[in-house]
Length: 107
Image 1 (cartoon, rainbow, N blue to C red):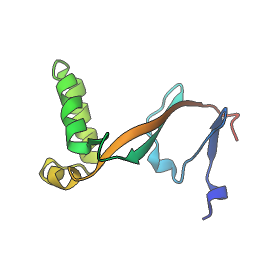
Image 2 (image 1 turned 180 degrees about the horizontal axis):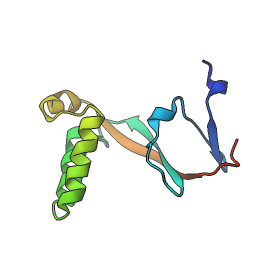
Image 3 (image 1 turned 60 degrees about the horizontal axis):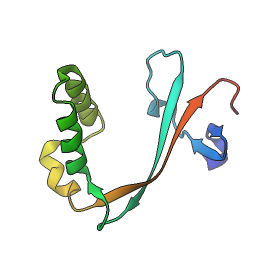
């Protein structure tokens, strides 16, 4: 399958290809919202994944349901706390962020 075979969502000058519909949440929703985050490896100005996970967990301390959901999503994504030292070596920073609303009329 080549890049042109993937569905592409556009908003202004942003293009995002979805390679597989299983990347998307299967639950029924009124709208599909996507966040497109561009990352750059940056040891000087970036944050390592374990530090980011710790920061988010700290922010969710008062909302036990959200904290549980966050931890469940980490597990679904394959993030295991025992592997945190492996993720600590690389640091990343956000260089660009776009939010997209996907509608049926987008081609």
